[in-house]
Image (cartoon, rainbow, N blue to C red):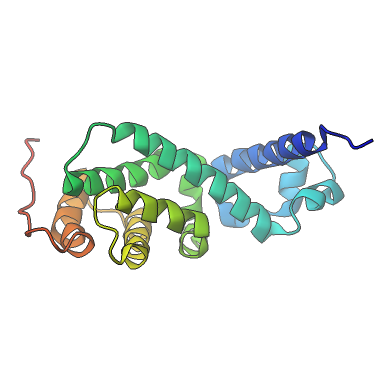
Length: 196
């Protein structure tokens, strides 16, 4: 007789390991966290850890994909009711950057003290690419969406690694340099002037 709970136990164990990794990423740069650290934090042996994640890259990928889904879910909630495609693009990108910055475990992936592995993960992740493409499709134009999504991901990584002086400067950069490239069929907009 098959163990019908085996798959659920596997999911719970994997989540527990990813939660332990999350706690470590909150305290340390992600690039410095190794499999031994994660096994210890999760309260399991290395053999158990490797049963669920065959190596550090697989564990890192699973973690990034889980957190990417969470970030995109939160952004989606923030953008409900925002129908102007250009403003939706800018607001979505700014919300993504802010969410990563405000989440210590995610911010550690872009730490300047070690190799910022978050950029590597963002460039290679099929999940991040698919979610970015889906977001851009909500703006109304799916022409060349794959290339445009890669560009948006690069811009987000750039802002996380090299932030603007303040939120207004980042918004202005997105309005001036991203909207015309990502939504080229639209007339060039003048940057908004927001009251301080």
